[in-house]
Figure (cartoon, rainbow, N blue to C red):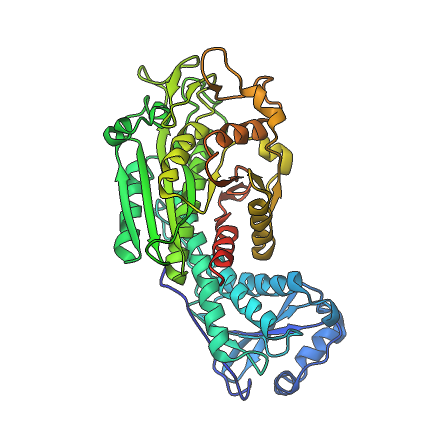
Amino acid sequence: MPRLTFSARKLSSFISQKTGAMVIPVFTDHSPNAQISALDTALGGSIQRTLTLGDFTGKLGTRANLLGIRGIKRVILVGCGSRVEFDRAAQRKFAQTSASVLAKSAATDATVDISDLAVDETGAANVCEDIGHYITTETYVYTETIARQKAQPALKKVVISCGSTITAARARTSLAIGQAIGEGANFTRELVNLPGNICTPTYLSKQARALGRRYTTIKTTVLGEKKMAELGMGSLLSVGNGSDQESQLIVMEYSGGKAKQAPYALVGKGITFDTGGISLKPGPNMDTMKFDMGGAGAVFGTMQAVAELGLPINVVGVVAAAENMPSGRATKPGDVVKSMSGKTIEILNTDAEGRLVLCDALTYVGRYKPVEVVDIATLTGAIIVALGSHATGVFANNDDLARDLLDAGQSANDRGWQMPVWEDYQSQLDSPFADVANIGKGGGNAGSVTAACFLARFAEDYKWAHLDVAGTAFSSSPKGATGRPVPMLVRYLRNRAGK
């Protein structure tokens, strides 16, 4: 769909506006400003009457639709709760509710009033960023493989009525930041939603090259199987042995900082379809394994957002892309492979393949002398057992990095929870035939932790964190990609850039 247009200005009069929908914040302790009072008078008192009837009270997250007047086709009341309790979470809820109702309406343009919100300038900027973000994500619709005409959101243009709390210029800047984050999340969702017969490793490399053409600050390099073999990436290559699709190592270098400035690194698991290989998965729900490149998708979305925002830092995004299939060429349980680091790995289960592609990518990214490395992967079902779909599992060899990611997630409403990477668990990965086994002894005991401990052995030379997004990158109901953890990662990199 066409890109949404966001703008902001101070409105001298609501009644004189022409808009498809006017969104008005309403608090439970309703005390409207002069603009809203004048609008209510023009509406014949319908706002106050709606509150008096009690069908709409202004409770946080509720909404009521009223017929408009003159050039205003609709008036949408959005509940904000109590003024004294209108904290950051409530501000975000107002933005989310406004975005949801506008995305579902038939309005082609809308005005959102924030002049009567109980916020200071920073709070108003946060609300504008939230509005830009959530309206962008709420209007995403997947259509790529659907032949029938699918209804598209009508909304094309949004104006913020910013009042005296925030300048129109700062409001526009905040809207643009939110839109960039939302578009990054939508890019991630689109890649992750695509079926495995379209979104192959080669398709991902084409998308990376397209990013390089779109943004002069991004340089893309793709390593094929021959080059990876020369570098000794036996672990990554072992995963794609059974597939007709060539594995790819995709490298996107964003240069927004000084030429000699060390980069921050993002490493994504890009298993474009995961059958489990010889350790074949059960048939039910195997179709969701097209989502197994959620980590890679997040790297793409974050790199796009970083380039769109022009952050003054350097970032390298590495995607280890492969398809895990069973065939006569496929890697077998009991096989031993040699990783790029020189460590040998006994593959006890070919369905624990994500860590096999990531470990070589983690070794490869070390050549950039990164400040910090964050890998993102739909790595284990065990993290869903531990945290469900609400929190991303955060593992790290540096507590400060873990804390900063957690803080970024809290700020972006894309939360994580720290899990241990203790030495106590490492013995579960001992193997009599290799330096390390690819799964822990004891079956599923602490499966997400032992997976992280495996990766930690290949990230000893730098500050490293691992995000297990198996529970957060996609949803089963409704089925589809969520775009997480793009908001967390963008906030983390904005903080690192001092923005």
